[in-house]
Image (cartoon, rainbow, N blue to C red; front, side, top):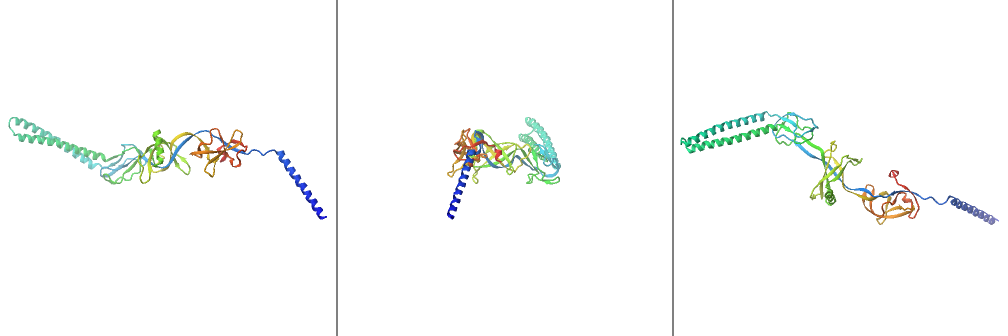
Amino acid sequence: MKKLFLAAVAASSLIVISGCSDQSEQAQASQGPAPAPSVSVVTLSAQQVEHTVTLPGRVSPMQQSHVRPQVEGVLTERLFKEGALVEKGQQLYQIDDARYSAQLASAKADLKSARANLKTLKARAARYKDLLSRNAVSQQEYDDAVAEAEQADAQISVAQAAVDLAKVDSDYTRVYAPISGQISRSYVTVGSLVTANQEQQLATITQLNPVYVDMQQSGKGVLTLRRAMQENGTLPVRLMLDEATGEMYEHQGILKFSEVTVDETTGAVALRAEVPNKDSLLMPGLFVKATVVLSTTEELVVPQRATTRQPDGSVVVMTVNKDSVVEPRTIKVNGVYKDQYIVTSGVKNGDRVIVTGYQKVKPGMKVNATPWQEQDSQ
């Protein structure tokens, strides 16, 4: 009796399970096939690509002059405002000129005396010449008179040179700006004793527009750069002021110079760019990151995020053909531009490459492709 009961229960269970299975199959049949997965694609087209090299650089002034005195004396006056712009030839300091004015006056007096003496000796030589013709004086006396007149003429040249030297020293008591630029603070105060060619400068004048940016590139890397310079003459240079924030300098410079020798100790070559600095934002000694644009070409690029690297090192992308079917492509990469790979083979203009959603699709699968927007992934 017990066996008959168990057999009945089992049979009823099979009927229930069979009924549930039939209901599930009917539900799936009523819903139809699963929808095609959605993916975002980018349609490839050739773009302008900049080939660049980025190097650390340091700002240096185009001209800088250390103002020093050329005569000794007490500083009596400062004639500029610290930190101001000064022009070449503008007077900056006045040194006490009393002694040099006196020396100039003395030299002028000596010159005047020498000229008077020459006048006397020339008249004497003329009289002796007349007397010699009448045998009133000897030839020796006449020769001596002529020699004394010539010596007096030479003394005039010596006295004139002394006047010129005294005038130069007197002029040196007025210290002028040798170049135009922005002047530093004054390193000496009025009343200080200064000496000729002293080690301590009075002030420093720096020309800040334009400025140089000095860089270094490895000996091997500079070959590409020098070829680009030979082809284009000058190369554009962009500066990044703050790497943390990505702040870029608004003015573009040009690469104008590279050394012709490689430094034996570092194996690097010195480069120099000239950059406009109208607002004096770039200060000498400031470290920047300089990007040199070598060339601009038209290339086919693929977003890096759309690629997968295989165990053998090859790079693969998933494409969507005209029938919305997924096709894998192996691409050849020839460099990086921003966040994209520069591609030379494997894909072509007009191909649609899956950027997002390629992880959930397989080759041969039909997909629903929509255009990819970069902001959608952020």
